Image (cartoon, rainbow, N blue to C red; front, side, top):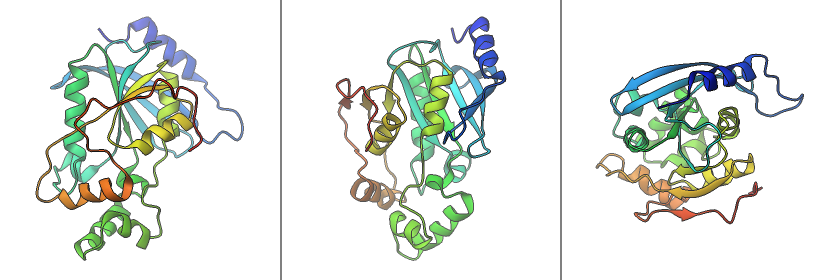
Length: 236
């Protein structure tokens, strides 16, 4: 069972005239929540609008997460080429499917789908970066040549969405320790990190190796990191 009708109504009522304080870096508002049966299990989908970036973001909710602790959460940044077209240059679609399947088999959980294409540089710039990678540069070098940081994403929107859904604490499905640090910086209580390991293919091996060597991603096969001792927001 997912969020009950009274809970859905409460969340939407709270967000109906939601206004963040003046000067707030991030402001997100829940607009609609509906049932969404999927091939990965029964989900509900919540549509969020972000005043900060003018984009629409989504939360795919399985089970009852309202006021719950240690909710499994996957933060997935939009990847049109991977998610929709099945590109083999990255592991985005594989991680999305693995996360939906895994959470769909659990008691509850959330997959947040954030509109941060190309690690936050946008679709057109991502394809420009692909051109540079075709010429021999790795993903970090390509971003820097285009004038961007290796990763331009920010997870303040994700933190705000989790707060709007009244999620008290999470276990995060990720291989990216920077994602953990950034969520903590935005006040999210994280109790553990759980790896999302998917088989590589011959096209994305250089991409994955760059994520490991240059961006610090942890492609471990262990259960992950217990983070209970670090409940307070961090500033790293």
